[in-house]
Image 1 (cartoon, one colour):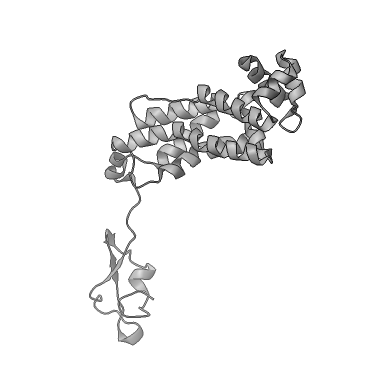
Image 2: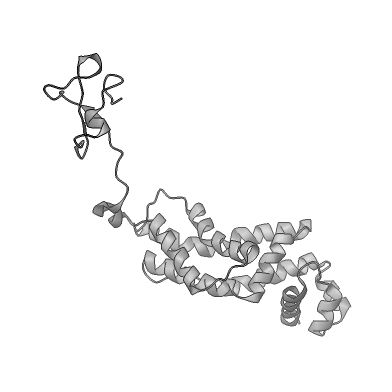
Length: 237
């Protein structure tokens, strides 16, 4: 009986949304008596909360491919499949319009649990030393899910394989493995001006010109740092 009821709720959410869902319609579609339904769930908020809880857990992807890059590719690929499902779309839109306090509380508890399956690849990657352990796992998790939610609930743009691959590529770039940073393709330290002896025969404010050597190389001839007079001691004008 419960399986038939849950399937009826999923179908009605896809067709009518949460606002149009009625327990009488659920009972009719599931082929059960209304009194049986009401004994199990006093309100539709309770019923929808239970359906959401039972439905999504079974379909959450949990990739474990052995490496950070493979895990994130697999995760985003599976999220494409999940977020293209009409049932998932209906559930997300139900969450977006929920105004029943009982349903909101149930969805909040469910949302906290929902994020656990996304955390796992990041936690494994940190344990293996593949990504920066100083990054916030919570923020990375939100960065995975948010693009998919935006497409389903806001822009209504397609959620396809190319989109999933794009999200994965961005995440790999943000959470760059340590080895990549050690190859010199990470951000360089900011240049710092170091005053040194003025070239002979140059003049400027206060009777001297100052050339500046930058860490990592000499300032180019004719550049502002090499030719402009200093406005204060120890720095270019």
